[in-house]
Length: 174
Image 1 (cartoon, rainbow, N blue to C red):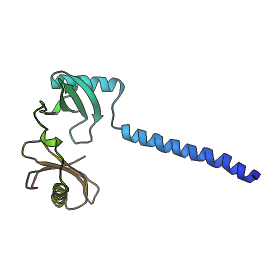
Image 2 (cartoon, helix red, strand yellow):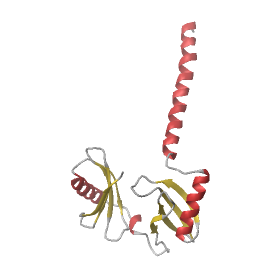
Image 3 (cartoon, helix red, strand yellow):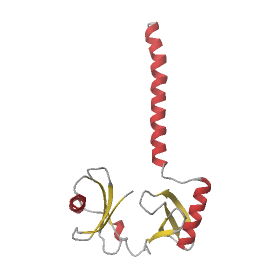
């Protein structure tokens, strides 16, 4: 091998390794950016566990929804409680899975492609177009579907739709 080729390998290979390491690190950081850790996690977990009436906080994340600061999954006696807290660690919302072993919750069902498409079209029509980011089943009273869309201006919207795909609630994420 020529000296020039060896010199290139000595420069290119470490550079490629550095780029790969940065890419992996960036992906890990982005995936965990919403996670809460340390003393902050302990305080948030304690407030959520108290609001849920006991149990163990198994997941603590920051929320990007208006009026919400944290979303905490608390497990109590084999059941899950999603507790949402504001900046002052006061409960904003609570969603209890009603899983007593007698069947799946409404939000555990699998949507058909036709349901996803119809809910997406209705959500896009409600905000004037854009991109569908997610469509899921809902277990909220009066809502069969939850859709998340980004409108043409880049604003993200959360929408609740009933079983006939009519929008029953919507708000922009701020």
